[in-house]
Length: 97
Length: 345
Image 1: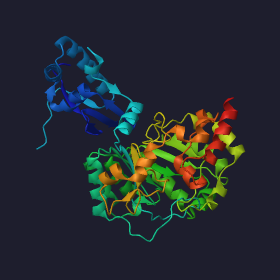
Image 2: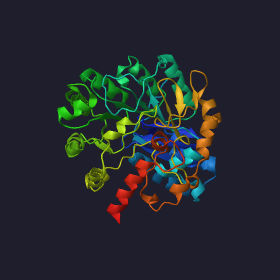
Image 3: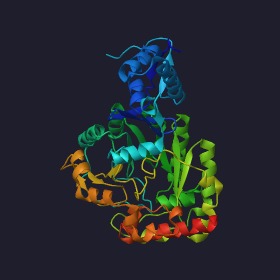
């Protein structure tokens, strides 16, 4: 999983309000709130970064021990993939111009 | 890792509290027109002589709502598909990353239009069906052949895999057939919602209340497990927030076809007009809105001490329209709460 590329599901609508994302998942119409750490992960998932890059970013931004960040990020990304907010891919996405 | 630095995803009730506390109009009910090709006998809308908002103004308002972090736009009418610019407006909203819900009677939807609606990827399309017998449905809509067209729309939208909800205002004339609507919804994989509250017209005219169902029907409805198990999460403003009588005006509002901003579509207290003012200014500074926001459950003197409070879904808009006072008992809510309490106790 660490080498997988993470991107936001293009179907979802979201807003970031004072460092916290509010995400609308289209399948169930539910609203979800992400805390600031989760929001950074979500916003970082642009399809060109691998899971391991995102863990590194979280360690830098929040001064978190890598072992703990590793465990929590993997759990969180898996959760958001399950909720169809994030998508994993073996290949990087092409950034739109 | 401390909770504060853990990546956490929280649910719907947290969002309701967060957006309410921060005054984010996360859900906006946007009435695009009062024109309609049906003549429903119970309709609460009143046509006015003022011009409706033109396309570019509607789009400008959508941009303003984007700046205020609105996330869900509920397009309604009248009949939204009578607006020639409907798809231009809805596509624009989707381009700005709004989740979009569409209320329609479905009678103008053919296969081509169903395809265009599917391309919008709406959260859901909602269509009112009053009964599976055209004599009943068409009598309520005032247009012969309307049931057939609405059912055809449901089939076409289903074929295009659009999430659907069937809505049924229940009246004396259509109550006996509501179970057939449940069966239709289940066949289509659609959500369904029955509304036992017919609403007075927005100008206060109450003659439509004679259509309301009574105690016998309400007892049957509230004891029907199929109806009461049909929880619907895409409600926008139905999340209960501690100590507030309603979320309207806190994290949601309505805009009518003439550009008036209201706390809710059925609370016709004009807070400002978007032809004259920007949304952000009205949302932050309207004295009417600030008054509504100041109301707490404890301000409802009769209701806050009522033994039926736990059964009550009092609607401030209905209290205002039917009983004339936003702080007093809402007669209809009292009737419904009493019946619910009799069933459960």
